Amino acid sequence: MSIQTVATKPFPGQRPGTSGLRKKVSVFRQPSYLENFVQSVFDTLGDCAGKTLVLGGDGRYHNREAVQTILHMAAAHGFAKVLVGQGGILSTPAVSCVIRKHGALGGIVLSASHNPGGPDGDFGIKYNIAAGGPAPESVTEAIFHRTESISRYRISDAPAIDIDRIATSRIEQMDVEVIDPVADYAELMQRLFDFDAIKALFGSGFRMCFDGMHAVSGPYAKAILEGMLGAPAGTVINAVPLEDFGGHHPDPNPVNAAQLIAIMAEDDAPDFGAASDGDGDRNMIVGRKFEVTPSDSLAVLAANAAVAPGYRAGLKGIARSMPTSRAADRVAEALGIPCYETPTGWKFFGTLLDAGKATLCGEESYGTGSDHIREKDGLWAVLFWLNLLAVTGKSVQQLVDEHWARFGRNYYSRHDYEAVASEAANELMASLRIKLPTLAGRDLGHYVVDFADDFEYTDPVDGSVATQQGIRIVMTNGSRIVFRLSGTGTEGATLRVYLERYEADPTYHHLLTQQALAALILIAEQVGGITGWTGRARPTVIT
Ligand code: VG1
Ligand code: CO
Image 1 (cartoon, rainbow, N blue to C red):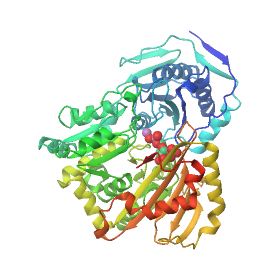
Image 2 (image 1 turned 90 degrees about the horizontal axis):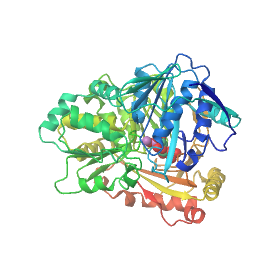
Image 3 (image 1 turned 120 degrees about the vertical axis):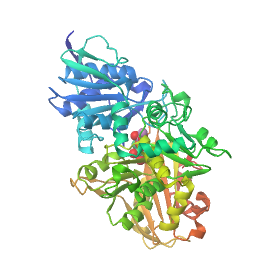
Image 4 (image 1 turned 45 degrees about the vertical axis):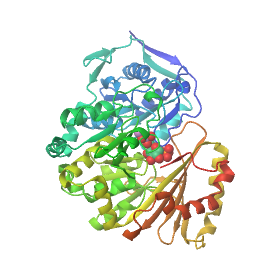
């Protein structure tokens, strides 16, 4: 066994997006493609002698091969130890948890999250830092610059090692410790939530359906819900991770988790439904015949955080991504704590969490989390809701209705136009930017524009600046339209249009969301010229 130095040439476009580098599997399978990126990560980290790395992925197609490649490269880079999930499996929140618990230098997550998998699907890779969260932009940019000039990578030629047995083996000087993917994570959840109360809830006949979507959270949900909390067998459906997610889109929203939505719409539906995404960091919360928006979920959890032992001491602050509805802001105001507005992507929450400025964070894209780790956390949110349901004895809908009655309702929707031509999407955004200075004060029928800008964020902790993070058109009554291009897609561009309208009067709290937002939807089309630029008469996905 020896360490080989292999000559290579840069590949264009290895710039990480909102959440790591995501490309088609066929792109990742080109000889040296993954190796170039991993070597660039290691070159950026510098000396790793004596250090520990965490490694795992969501089990999608190409996960196993990539794990072997990275293990052999880590050995060549001098790491002392790699903690790898059994079978190459670790959810994104579990990676974050394991990095923190074992004092690792960092970790590598292999996932394209909610993007489809399989030979024709997507693959992805992301580096997380010692705090457990996604690398900040300063680091991802350094990695990207390294990929542009890379000329060699180093790798051990040792044979492939067994990642299916919980045991420690060696590549060169490096220990490869295969760990139970669930254990550390489950132990952390047990410390945060009232497991006895949740056990009693399941013992009383409460029924739940958790849709693992054939992705990574199945084994976690089975072990925790059915194993530790005594939920009946069969509570977790689609529980076995498959390399192609059963041909589905592992994205927990009402469109892609249609099976769960159908189950929850039946007359004798379970009391509680939930789903998670490819890598286990997203969550969708569903009551009987009732869907909870992610923005509302964040606000409800924040308002009721004291039910959970891990949050009894109170919240330091709440942080949400800019396009996420302002429902959480109203809770923060009532609690007398700050509410931070960050750009899209979990990496922007890291500094706030590290500095103790925020306890809960959330994104409209079905992401919720807290300072227990540095990633969003799907099952964590589900356990939080279970804890809340157990303590209050109320239904999901009752809790949300009461929340709206107290704080008002933020009607909210996201319209996605997927796989549109990149050039057209860029031109749409450019034309909006030109219009921005002319919009303030304009009367648009039902709404008058208060201000319009391109969201720019200065991190209150480290002072770093992120520009062009979404065009927002904010009305005088606080209603908003936001335009943004996705940073996680692999085909053309995806335009996201976010719509929000606040309604204080409970008489109007039960309108259909798209109807409640109809006037704003019309304005988005008029101002953005969406159909003209994209050629699309309607969105691909509405959530
Ligand atoms: C999307 C979501 C964003 C989320 C990101 C990663 O990004 O909008 O809120 O943080 O995915 O989530 P974009 O750039 O496509 O809008 V995950 O669960 O795919 O890692
Ligand atoms: Co995800």
